[in-house]
Length: 265
Image 1 (cartoon, helix red, strand yellow):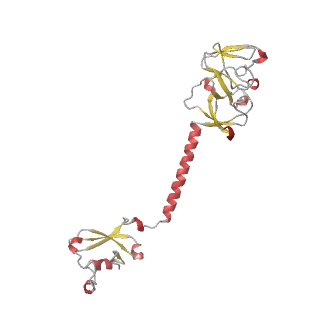
Image 2 (cartoon, rainbow, N blue to C red):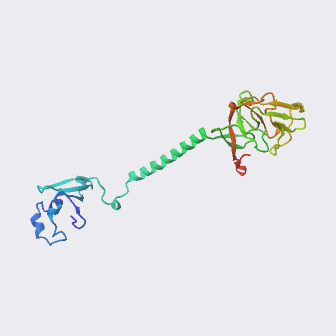
Image 3 (tube, one colour):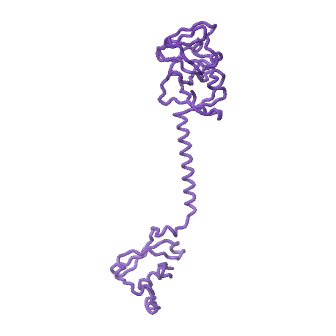
């Protein structure tokens, strides 16, 4: 029994401490300690946190000691931790931290999957039709989040009857109700205004170098590839003007190759 640190080996020590046990007489004859002026009246109806070191009976649990008006001593388990500094790390704490780390990682992965499912998609470029803006084997980010078609946007379009149903990537040249005119010199006019197209590779020509004059139907777009001589697009009867509903999204960012990573213009 350690009176100084309020640690007790068993219940008998608790009783002796408060003068209720068999060794009361023997205690009174011992050398006075710092508890000699202890006023028992001050202990009535109060709780005292003590620790009993009898592992077989208590398993090192904390106990509340209470003295009531009838001078009975009650001992009951106290689940409170008195001093966190003396609380040893349990193996379960390590497992809990590990589960928290795993849970955070899983939630992050799910978040990324949801983002790339509903907001962004990665698309691979195939073929030379968009050179020199995009090249075959480039990987780009595409989004259809609140997307509304605009002039010069690079869009990914689903053409079920073309290219074995694989999506195609083209640039929007005209929107619904716009008039497109391509002369036999390769110049492109939209609503009678000649377009400045610094992104194209060679000049624009039509099939058999014939002039093209067309008004884009409502709800459709007119698209062409930047590599005009190697692009099958709205100039060709197999594609023509494209319904806006077939637009999967707009390409806005190049992911690969890394030396060309960045915004697509």
